Image 1 (tube, rainbow, N blue to C red):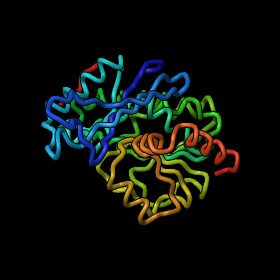
Image 2: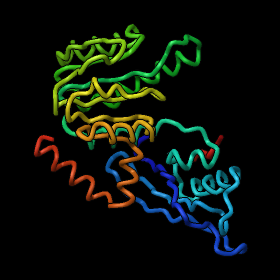
Image 3: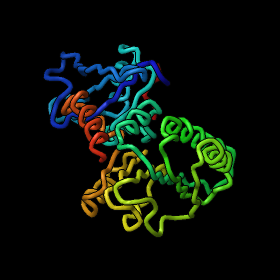
Amino acid sequence: MEGGKILYFYLKEGEKWKKHRWNPGKMPVKDIGIGEEGMLGCCGVPEFYWKNSAWKEDRLRDAMGRMMKEQGAEEFYLQPRLARLAGVDEKMPPEMLLKKVLSQSPCMEYLVYIGGSWEKRGAWEEEEFREERRLLFYLLSPYLARINHFTLVTGRPEGYEEFTDYIYDEYGIPTAVVAKMDRPYGKDGRTVILDRGRGREPALQAIPYRASYVDFWCEDGKRERIEKEREDIRYISVVKFLDTLVKNGYNTIVNSRRQECREGIGPHIRE
């Protein structure tokens, strides 16, 4: 989805939806234009329904669903902590947000892509696998001209042959295919790692110094381990980007990323 509006719901800790029982409650929305990708609405959700009473899951989902309708939003993304509070399965961020976050990363020369886990071969898994390859091409198309080398980490390399053949034939980008990251791939300070995997520990010993690590699933545990054990790695995710955006403002984020590059460094909420 491009050119529409997406709502990002995030948790406002310690705040209450209602001060009094008769108060209808509200969630202020801050609209931010993000170029041709469309409009982003940042919507803070109070942690409590009334006083110190926790939200009931269905009530919270209904409230967010109404906000979607009121705002005319076409898509949404929930901060993982809020998704758990609402009893909603966490989902990968919408393509528009992944594309925006990738545009904030430093200029990539050596790219490492960690694919999803596709050991099963059922119809659903095959459809998801095709969708992953489509998303990969969509996200990387603007950057192929500047990539020098591509490393693919996957147990099913045959599924990516069309993509790897294309980037070699059109851009001369060679591809190394490995089953797991058992040593550093790329070069220090010039590597971007895209992690599509979920629930897997990052192979910190195999990440080059001062690499950028883009986590598609925004996993708190992965972020905490990277920031604790490898301070040189720049962890990037949609949630980290959006939470910083909400706190500091869009222009501050965009301007800082540009400086780094110059210096070289409708739907409803459902369960």
